[in-house]
Image 1 (cartoon, each protein chain N blue to C red):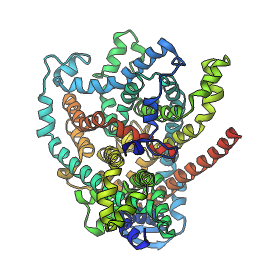
Image 2: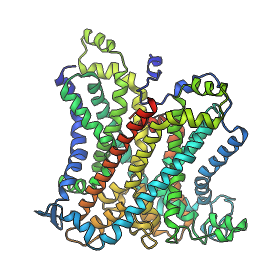
Image 3: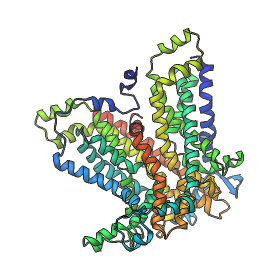
Image 4: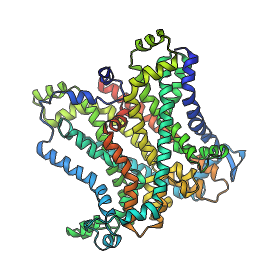
Length: 299
Length: 299
C-alpha cells in the first residue's frame, strides 16, 4: 500500500488519539513545572511543586499514608491473585466440561463498575442492617460482626478483600489461557514418570507460567496505583473513616478539584507526574525483570 | 475462510479457545478430584452471592430490609425500581450512559479498523512510527492527564458535553482496538486484495467490500470489549460534566446514593439498573469478552 493511501486510513485515528490522549499526556508533565494562580499559568518553578509534596501540609501527612495504602492494596491483591487465583486456574485446568461455565461465573464481578461494587459492599457490610453481620451473628460468631468499613483499623483490609473478590476472575482467565497453551504432553510425560500433581505444577507448569504471572502482576500494579472509583464509593473523596481508605488518586482529586489552594494545579500536577513515573517506571522495571527470569527459565 | 480466521497462531490476540474446545478429552484426570470440584463451586457461590443479594434485596421494601437483613423478597416488590428509575432520574442517567458508550465504541472501532488496515498493509517507516505511538497508549495511565484534558475540553467548549466524552473515550479506545485489529489484519492473505485491485477496486472499496467482512469477528470482539470500561468509567464524567441531567450511571449513582442514603432498597435497585446491561452483554457475548480479557497475554 502506498504511503499516501496508508496515511489517509490512519489520520482519523491519529488525530483523535493525538488530540485527546497524547497531547494531554505530554502537557501533564509540563503543568507540574510551573506555578499556577488559579487557572492562570505563572512562572517556571522547576521542581518546586514536587518539593511542596514532601515539605508542606497537608501533603506531608496525607501523601505517604495514601501511597502506603496503594502499595498495600497492590501487595494484597497481587499475593492473593497469584496464590488463590492460580490455584483456582489449576483446579479448573483439565475440567473440560465445567471449566467454561465456572470461568464465566468467576469473571462476572470483574465486569461490574467499581462504584457499584463499592456501594454494594457498603450496604452488605453495614453494621446494623447488612446481611454479612446478620449471618455472622446468626451462626454464633458475634465477635466477628464488626463495623468492617467503619473501623479505621479494618477498612483498608476490607477494601483489599472487596477488590480481590471483584478481580479474581481476571487472573483465573489469564492463567487458564496460559495453562491451555502449554502442551499437554509435558505434564502427561511427568505423570508417567510418577510425578505428583504438585510436582508437575511446581517443576513444569509454574516455570512456564512465569510470563502470565508477570503480566498479571504488572496489570495489577497499574490498576492498584490508579485505584479511584472503589475507594471513592467506599469512603468518599476523603477516604473515611479518618483517612483509612485514602488513596493517592483521592489526594490528587481533592487537591485538584476540591481545594482552595491557588497553586492547586501545580501541586496536583506534580502528584500526577510522580504517579506517572511510578507507574510507568514500575511497569517497565517489572517487564525487564520478567524478561531476565524468562531467559533463565528457558535456558 | 472462517477456518483460516479461527486458527490460533502463537501471536494471535484471541486466546487459543478453539484449540481448547476441539482438543480431545484429556486422559490425565483433573486436579483435585471431587474436593477440587466442591471448592470451585463453593467459590462460584462466593463470587455470585453478593450480586444475587443485590438483585434479591432490590425487590424488598426498605422497611423489610431494615427490620430483617436476611429476609426473602416474597412477594417481590418492584416499587424501589420506580423510586430509582423515575424519582431518582436513573432513567436519564441510563440514556446518557447509552449515548456516551455507544457513540464512543462506534467512533473508536471505526477509526481503529481503518487505521489497523493501513498499519497491517503498509511497509513505510512513517507508518511504523505511528504504530509505535498508538501502541504506547496501551499502558498509559490516561486518568492522570485529567487536568490537561479538563483545560483542553474547556478551550474546545466541550465541558459538560456528552459529545466531548464520546470523543475522549473514542480516543482512549484506539490503542487497544488497533492492537487487536492490526494483528488480525496481518493474518489475512494479501492475495485477496491484489485480486480486487486487478479488478479495478480502489483502496477504500477493497477495505469495505473485501477486508471488513473478513475481520468482522475481531471488530465485534473489540466493540463489545470496549463497551465495559466506558460504561463503568467514573473519573472523566465526574470531572468533565457539570449538570446532573448529563451524568452517566456511575456518577449519577453517587448523587442518587447521597439523596437516598437511608433507602437501601432504592439503592439496590439503582445498582441493579447500572449493572444489568453489562451482565446481559456478557451473557450474549461471552466469547468476545473473554477474548478481550485475554488479549493482554500476548503483549
